[in-house]
View 1: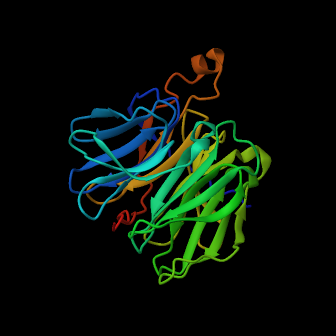
View 2: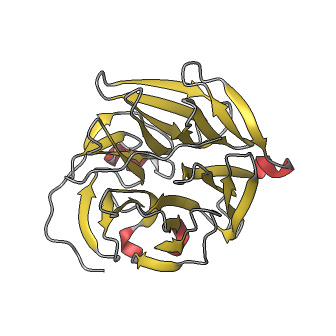
View 3: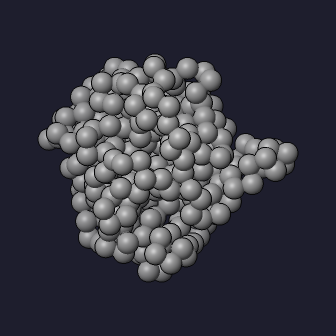
Length: 297
């Protein structure tokens, strides 16, 4: 992969959240807040960029992702279930429960596709290879296991023409491009769009802009990379922390790139060197995002 022209684009800290494992940001245009989660703390957060305030709702279990619902509420993927969440009170109502291995697994990143279905990764608590899977919850309540044999199922996005799905299983160090059927929601086996060298970190959560460029958080890589539709590295947003976990566009013009981070694997000495690890960051890279898809169930 070629290195892009010299860029001094840096993200600014907007919330010193000190999250253990910040993840899953999604912009809510009606409430004008950024929803995000701290997975291991079992917390759903709502950050208000106007006031700088942040509300926290405890789920009582690890929370992988949050998504908007067409009905106006939220959808949350938790360790043992996928649930509807009241954004005013944080009250959860189970839509789908998982089996007896709940204590051995947790949910990871998740997003809605253009048809209104919710996709979410599930993985072993110790990230054991091959025990992860990619699930899809259709609007009618049907839960399907789409991919198995994964390890850390992570970022996903869909192209503007609704014909391509992008997906990350982090240890594979690549973004995979899948043909997506917008009628049946089926995907093919996929082909690598871009691979990342060992010294770049692991690809984690990602988002897509209106030009179909992918913005991918690099865990251990101190940055977010922008990848063109043909797999070229065209931009980089630098951060002062190493564990960069996910990103999304927000703000009224969808030009604010919000970035979640973590401090999960950092030693006390490393935290001393990265005091704002686990914070929420923002950059203005010039690109414009697209509105988040909503769960139609």
